[in-house]
Image: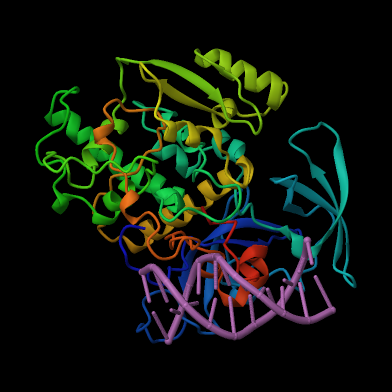
Length: 445
DNA sequence: ATTGCCGGGAG
DNA sequence: CTCCCGGCAAT
């Protein structure tokens, strides 16, 4: 992210694992405590490789009591993988089906071939589908919540949703992470490969900051003095933010601009809910191939619900429509060409994957934040309002680093990748691309 | 040194 | 296609 530093090894506490319950089924939970019998407290980062280390698992289900396990009994990142695991009938598993994570129940597990007969609960149809899956293809943990699920129950992402700008933050996220690319090749620079999760993580802090701001200044004050002060702001966050905007017109930032400093002011303005709009707003459907646009929020949501998503079902989270449209302000003459570009494109991986990343990496980020307890500086998040914020001079376009040397190479994103998340020892958990030394699709942009 | 991943090769 | 890996760039 913006720290520029790699995170130290994450503490194992908080790691999501699956462990065997009394009934022979695996249940999800997280490491709640680590007990190391060895009288050597020298290793304080919880990665104590004593064979007798016991891990207290707190299960997600309130019905189950905490229990201690050895590492060999636990399944999850940092522990054993699925190989060799024997699943009983009725075991709840998770797998990716049609690009979404769905849950399923094991009907049968062939220990010889490690093939599972599972019955999945498709989110899109009432009927349960029986499916044959390899053991490796299923997970015991709901590793990456699908967006709708993430929205349904209490999720960390919720925390980022403060009352004021409720849902706006997520509504801005659905936008394609990077412009003009259907392939993995990306333009020379964009903050779009920033970890969205991390950005969310920053949201908390940022929102806190905003609250403070609003206490000390009038709501509409354009910009508090010293807002752009780097000392109070993580440098990475700001610098990454301004690299996000690419445009065909590399107009340099105004040299004398008072907020020439990395365009933070712009970000802040964008974060701020704008009550009075100067320009009219259209809502554009971002469903692939769809160009529908309308000028009311309800209309676009109705369009998406009716044309693309289908009738809402019981249990569906509301607001799912928000992932499929973008809100665009139409400037008086016409929006700059560059913006329309951004609006038109969709990410290479349609929403589900993308949203999963969002939640997934958010968790990762939060996890490490919580555990490290490091007083990280307040990061100003990069928002992704494509909404054209009036005067383009505020747009800091980093066309500067446009394509100097390596045109094809994607800049390194600070997302955690499969390798980092699962480690070499759990290579089987990596996404395929990571396994092939290709650009990560799971935690990638 | 490590990590991410492009480019290219093998099957 | 899928899968693998050399090698380079970024960190």
